[in-house]
Amino acid sequence: MRGARGDDDRVVDLSDDFVVLPEQTTDDTDRGWGERSGGNDEWLLAERPPHWD
Image 1 (cartoon, rainbow, N blue to C red):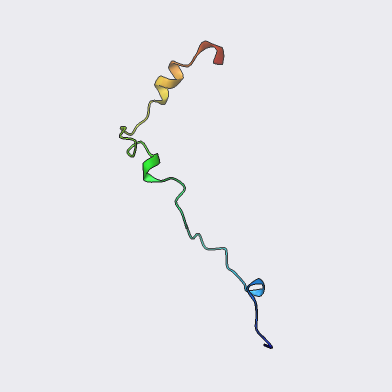
Image 2 (cartoon, rainbow, N blue to C red):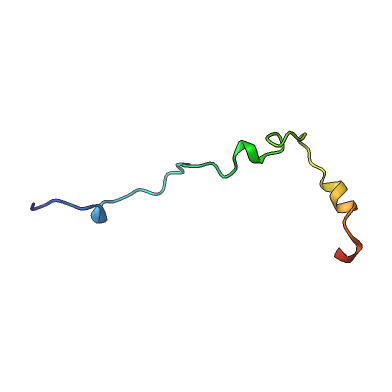
């Protein structure tokens, strides 16, 4: 076939911010684990072992 173009010649526009899969699932959130939101970062920092300093 003359003039037929294969996939290698096709122009693909990658400038769109199309999301195929989310970066984080709902299972992998505080709510998904049954925890309250807000976190406990302050407590974790206060309770860290002395050898981390």
